[in-house]
Image (cartoon, rainbow, N blue to C red; front, side):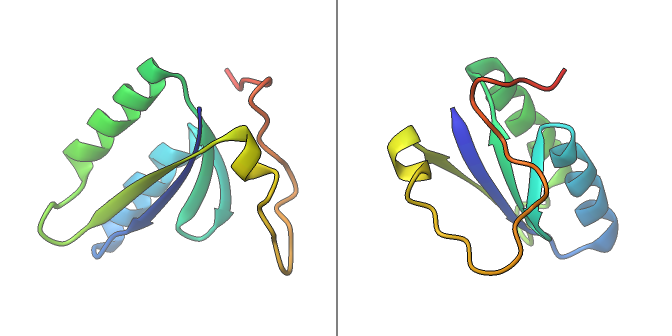
Length: 92
C-alpha cells in the first residue's frame, strides 16, 4: 500500500528521530511529508516505532493511504523530488 505520511513534531530532538526513521521507510517529498510503500508488516512496525517516539500530547503523525487511481491524479506545482516511489520496487 502507498501512504503519504505527514508529521507535526514540536521538539527538535524528537523531530529528528522521527525524520530519520521515516527516511528508512520512504522518500521525503517535503520537510515533514514522506511517500512510503509499506506492506502490512512494515506498516505495523513503523506505526509501533513511531508511537514510542511521539509525544501524544504535543505531536501528530498522519498516514494517508493512496490508491493507484488516486496517485495518478496527484498534481505537484514547483520542484519535484529527484526520485519516485513505485509499488513494484522495494528498497531493502
